[in-house]
Amino acid sequence: MAAEPDIQPLPVQAAVSAAPADLPETTLHALEHLQSRFAGDRMLLRNGGRIDEVSPSHYRVRGISASARLGDVIEHRSASGARSGEIVRIGPEEVLVAPYERNADAGIGDPVFIQTGRGAAPHASWRGRVIDALGRPVDGAGSLLQGKAGEAAAAPLAMSRQRVTTGFRTGVRVIDIFTPICFGQRLGIFAGSGVGKSTLLAMLASAEAFDTVVVALVGERGREVREFLEDTIGAESLAKTVAVVATSDESAMMRKRAPDMAMRVAEHFREQGQRVLLVLDSITRFAHALREVAIGVGEPPVARGYPASVFTDLPKLLERAGPGVDGAGSITAILSVLVDGDDHNDPVADSIRGILDGHVVLDRSIAEQGRYPPVDPLASISRLAPKAWTKEQQILVTRLRSMIARFEDTRDIRLLGAYQPGADPELDLAVRQVPTIYEALTQTPQDRVSPDPFADLARHLRSKEKPVDEPVE
Ligand SMILES: Nc1ncnc2c1ncn2[C@@H]1O[C@H](COP(=O)(O)OP(=O)(O)O)[C@@H](O)[C@H]1O
Ligand SMILES: [Mg+2]
Image 1 (cartoon, rainbow, N blue to C red):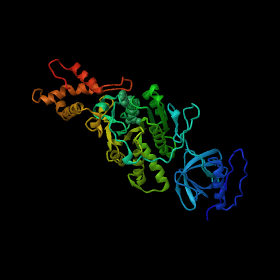
Image 2 (cartoon, rainbow, N blue to C red):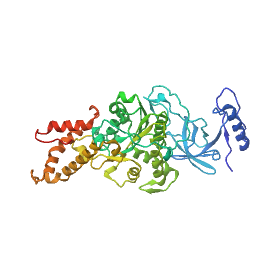
Image 3 (tube, rainbow, N blue to C red):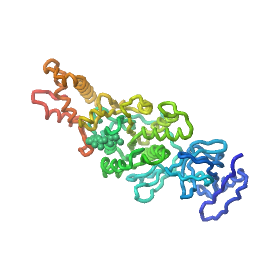
Image 4 (cartoon, rainbow, N blue to C red):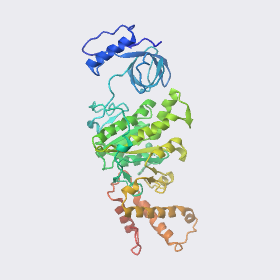
C-alpha cells in the first residue's frame, strides 16, 4: 500500500483549497491532468509525500513512488525553509533523495513535493555571469533571464555530426606547436596536484578563437575560484565566459550536477552556431562526486571504490561535447585530470584517456625546473594534430621531438661528464638547441599570447645561434 498522497495548494491568484487527503490517487491524477490543461506549468495541485528516514547523505520519502522519475527535482519544506534535492532511487514504496544543500536539515514527517516547473534554461545574457550547479546566480549581479527550455540532453547522432577539421591557435606556444587543437576536439590535461593544470586551463580559456567560453569549476577550494576567474582568465575573456561553480564544500549532488549544467550552457550556444570552449576543472572531482552519490544509493564498488555507473556517466557527459549537427557550432572541451602520485593506473584517468581525442601530460620534474607550462612534449599527443599542422610544421615538430628525446635520454650521461662534443653531430645539435627551445616555450599567464608560435620559436633560435649554424626551420 502506498502512503497517502499529500496535496499542496500553490500560492496563485485563483485560490484553490487543498483537496481532502483521503481522495483516491486516480481522482487526484485526473484533477492534476485537467488543471494542467488550463494552467500549463502553473500547477495548482501537486502530488507529495513525507520524509520517512534520514541519513547524512540521503533521505527516504514515502508517497511519491508512483509519479517519481529518476533525476526529478524535489522540494522539501524543512523547519528552516525550502530545500531541494534529487531523486536517485525509486522503490515501490519509497524513493531515495540526495539533497542539494550540505546541511539538508530534514526531519521525519516533513512534506516533500516533486517540482513541476522546469529547471534553469540557459540564455544568451548569461555570458559574464557566475552560476551554481542549478543555474542560480552566485555573483550577486541580479537575477538571470531564462531561455527556452530544451529537450532532454543527449549527444547528437554520430552520423549527423559535422567532422572535426579546423585547427585554431590557443595562444599557448607549447600546445600550439606540439599538440595543436581543432574546434570540437576533446582534450585532457593530466597531472598530479599543484603541477599547473588549473593555470594552463585558464590560459587556454583566454583563447581568442571562441565566441563563448563555459568554465565548470568542480570541487575546487572557494579561494581558487576567484583566483581562476579574476587573475588568470582576466576581465576581457570573462565578459564572454559563463562560469559554473560547485566548490569542494558543496554537496556531492551539486558537484555531480555542475558539469551537466555547464554542458547545457555550452549546448545552448552551440545551437546558436557559436564556437564554444568548455573548460572543466576537474573531471576527477566530478568522478569523486559520482562515486559518492552512487555509493550512497548502494551501488557496489568495482574498481578502486568506484561503482560501475561512474564509468558510464563519464563518457555520457563527454560525448555531448564535440561538433554539432550541420549548421550548428561546436563544443571544444578541455578538462583536467588529476593523476595522484603519478598513478597512471588510476581507473578514472584510464577510462577518460580512452574517451578523449588527445592528452597533454604535465610533469612535476619539469615544473621543478621552472619551465611553465610544464608540458612533457614527448608524452603528450593530440590525435587531431595532423589536421591542424601544415605539412612543413608536422615535419618540423617530428624533428623537434626526436631532438628533445635525444637530449632527455642523454641527460644522465651528460651530468656524469661522459659527453664529448664532436662525436655525434645530432646530439651536439640537440645539446645546443634544446635548452633554447625550452626557453622559447616558457610562458606565464601574463605573457603576451603568441599569434604564430612557430615564427616565435624560429626567431628565438636564430637569436641564440652563432651565425655559422643553421637554425631549424
Ligand atoms: N604557466 C605558469 N607560469 C608560472 N607559474 C605557474 C604556471 N603554471 C603553474 N604555475 C605555478 O604552479 C602553481 C600551481 O598551479 P595550479 O595551476 O594551481 O596547479 P594544479 O591545478 O595542477 O593543482 C601555481 O600557483 C603557480 O605558482
Ligand atoms: Mg587546480
